[in-house]
Image 1: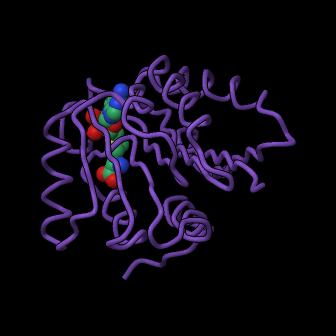
Image 2: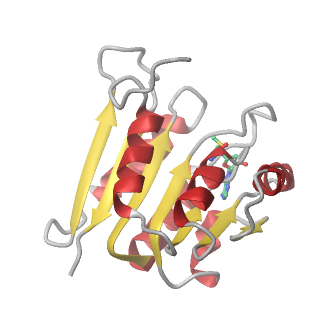
Length: 190
Ligand SMILES: C[S@@+](CC[C@H](N)C(=O)[O-])C[C@H]1O[C@@H](n2cnc3c(N)ncnc32)[C@H](O)[C@@H]1O
C-alpha cells in the first residue's frame, strides 16, 4: 500500500484537520461531490446522527456519490444537483464545508468550478460556518481558469478578520508548478 503521510499527501493532511474538528452528530457540507470520495469520508466521520449535505452541478456526480454512500450502507446524507453558491438556501449552520475544485475526474474537463460561483459560495460558507468551524478548499491550477479562481478566493480570504479567523495555506513548493494547493479557513470558537 502507498505511504499515507500528511507531508506527502495534501488530501490526507486535509482529512486529518477535518477529523480534528468534526464531531459525531455534526452537520457538514461537501460543496463539490464529484465521485463521492470526500462525501463518503464525511458521512462516516459524522456517524448516523450527523447530517451531510452535498452539491454538484452534474447529475452524474450526484448519482455516483449516492451510489458510493449506498454501497457502504450510509444514509445520513442529502445530495442536491445544484450549484454550491446556493448553499444558504439549504442550510443555516455547518461545522465543516469542503470544496475540492476543478473538473470531475473521468468526465468532461470542460465542466469545472468557476471563480465567480466559487467565491460566492465561499463568502456564504464563511457566514454559515459554526464557531469553531472549518472550510477546506483544494485548488488545482493545471486547467484553464484554475489560477484565476484561486487568485479571486485568495484576495477575499486575505482580508478576513484575524480576530475571528485563521487562514492557512499548504502547498508543496519543491514539486511541480501545478501541484494542488490547500486552503483552510478556520473560524475560531467562542
Ligand atoms: C474535483 S471534483 C470533486 C471531487 C470530489 N469531492 C470527490 O471526492 O470525488 C469537482 C466537482 O465540482 C463540480 N462543480 C463544478 N462547478 C460546481 C458548482 N458551481 N457547484 C457545485 N459543484 C460544482 C464538478 O461537477 C465536479 O464534479
